[in-house]
Image 1: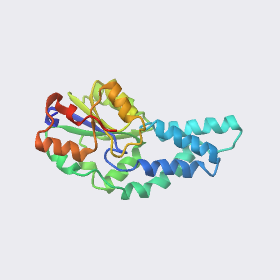
Image 2: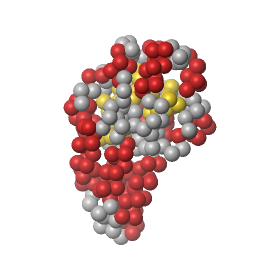
Image 3: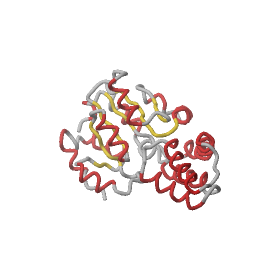
Image 4: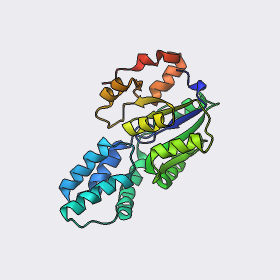
Length: 235
């Protein structure tokens, strides 16, 4: 697999660029627990099972469960605001994927973009503050637009060049990639997708640990063409 062959590379953010999945999982619990602890647990399970889906949809699920139980709760916008307040500091401090700058230098002819379930304004603010924004010359995109729609529009309406590759850590990332006819690689090290290994085997999806392994593969020319199969087998 030679990344130089791809004209567009699409990155998820949480669990791929930033080690931020756990920060967001705890933030969902923190926001929901004062309203109802049991439903907070349900929300966390729903969040983990639906990685890559926007917080707006996740709080829609929570609010529906609140209505079913007759529990009063703030509106979706307010819950999302509280969530954003809780994650912002962590996003500014959490680890960034190793060798990201070197990987960018190794793919000078590729355009890079971000397609995330995170709030778009928050995402752009964090990337700017952390000096990452300039790496993504094809744009940084997030919710409330859904990830599948972001990726589809990028290639069908906004002229992103093919062939394209998406790097993600969730089922939603994979669905966004195949919906736009992109190649896909799972990055497993920071993922909270509990069935990643099984899902990858069933769908014949390559799995790497992280961007550092992807970069080392480029440097050693260990994965070229279909030889990315060498990196399967995460468990």
